Length: 235
Image (cartoon, rainbow, N blue to C red):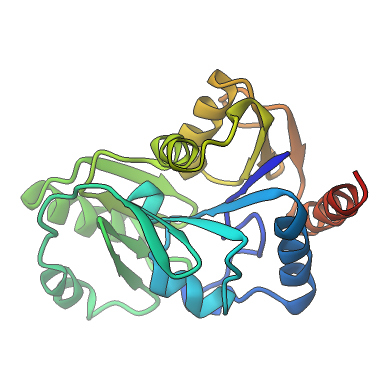
């Protein structure tokens, strides 16, 4: 079995601010337990530093795909890196939104994310600011997620990221299960289904892409992961 897990909204509930989405010790021990006996990778839009700040120490049995596939790590060792264009001047965007409260910019390798979960005003204003900025500094890809706009300045996505993971590890993709909760995971869903694996969505409403099942929330995911850990320890 190969387990590929998104982080925010899948392993942990989505937090008001990205830095608050810290994993609890119980869930982390389950993930570490799975990785000791089965193959496991976490696939996140966060960069390495941001992920480690909320996850803590990363065991060398856990592979990590960061920034939607831009980099792949095993422990702290980078084993793959995607070419990216020159990043835009984020300080210009920071200046533009400084007058608004409840907005967080996540500056990361290969792009940036504009989080507005805490914003109480007219969300069309956030949309206008975001699109005016990216029209000036066009990215390779735009993602509209749950209370977040993302601009990516590389050609990669989570689907390409897991293909690169399979290439560097030699893992069989038909043995893989991918679990994710947002539009940023749809590329991974499509890729894993094309390669013969399974895809599971976390949420209430079924997405428009092909999946094999749904978890209502992160607690259902945790319960399922506990069963997976037991299966991996007692094959």
